[in-house]
Length: 119
Image (cartoon, rainbow, N blue to C red; front, side):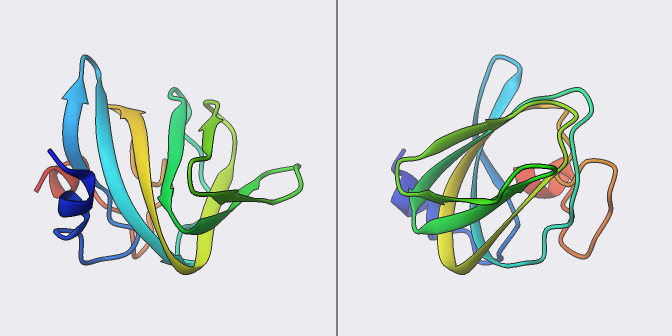
């Protein structure tokens, strides 16, 4: 599979798409643009972010915000409040347990169910 070709099938921002699975984790791709993701956490799961293209602002509660750039990886530990945003389009890969809810317990206009992410 070619990651760039997979990104052509993603038309909405903040709408992760599952492109594969390894054991109990999903590999997802998403495009980020804007500030629509609410503060949230994943009570029982860590979450890995890998920047494929562009830049993304990462905010972690009680920490200074930082910018992730192409090639950067960051792992959010379970239970840590966080959110992401980007002024321009940013392409990311997420590696998450299959049980990880998109925006944790917070439901917003961009929240996607696992079923929606598998389409």
